Length: 386
Ligand code: NZQ
Ligand code: ZN
Image 1 (cartoon, rainbow, N blue to C red):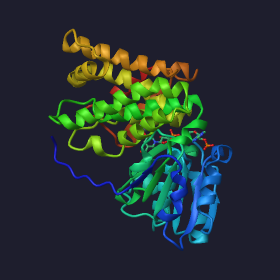
Image 2: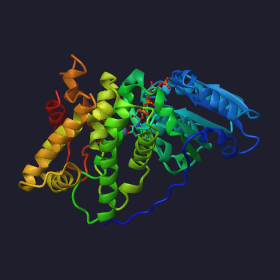
Image 3: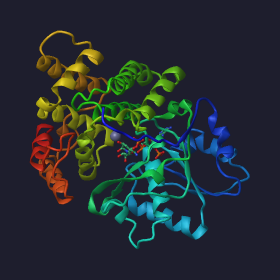
Image 4: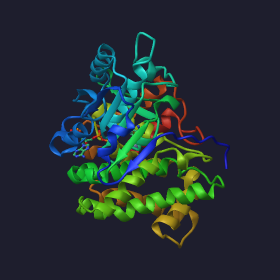
């Protein structure tokens, strides 16, 4: 096991009707800006619940943060935060609204002239103005971590940021919110969370038995509840397991003491930046092919995953590992998630060159747990995904 530090200060309020407890979590006298997305909260009752819970607070609103939160739109929110001297941010949404809020939390205290530098340089966010979240879509784990991913549409860039100053003060996780989520977003959430576990697991054996077992438990839980929650989003028990699995997949716990990869995400972000494909779907396109391409590096963990997750008990290490990749792809298909780039866009042929060039231009000469995935390898992996 590798050395590690672990601190996660986010308070979780989990369960039915927890939104009503909001007022107690925000310091009295705060000037609050509530941030939300394209309007789903206005039709599913969450907006009303938040407004009722915060009656008595000095409360402003900023809606319209799109999926894959856009820098240009967030800059309008930043101007409002400064003009109104906001002291507390409340994100009400999925990963996009929460990530946008994290950017604003950092940018509001940033002293440089160009907040994009926080992403482009990148600058670690040691501090931010305090914020909390009401999670409406289980998927990213952003509600209990300190990272964010922001898009700049004008330059087709999608970049990450983060730092210890960007943990939410609290996050409210009421699994009842799942009832209004469209089926394809549920599928995205399962796929994103599952791939988060894979990125922190599918490397090489690191004698971290507990981390492996926790990671495997999260994957097993997602596989078990996926068909239930896909069929019936009002199944509260399944909604609880789904929501908590997504949070646990990326709150830092399972990555401690082990090597991590994250190249599926790095490449996937380029597919979203170029073709506007949903984040989770880019992962399903890349992950199976990345595991095929880096097979020798990952075959021991792939074989362990084959045995423990997919119950593949016979065959050589290589045979089990290959079968596990096929099972993973079939799992994504069972969620109606397509795994070929050409199934998402007719304009796919330049994508390999675009992704490889982008990563190179950013100085990312090597990705992966062994830092041996070069831009040329990225080219080949993306080409395999056509
Ligand atoms: O905008 P509204 O109208 O609210 O609709 C949203 C949006 O269209 C809708 N939605 C959310 N909750 C709903 C709902 N619809 C009905 N009922 C509800 N209860 O769902 C759509 C997608 O929302 P979004 O927030 O974009 O989805 P997700 O949570 O998957 O977030 C994706 C973003 O998070 C980033 C991704 O790159 C992407 O930009 N990620 C953030 C991470 C992090 N901070 O740790 C890690 C992830 O790997 C990921 O990169
Ligand atoms: Zn993700």
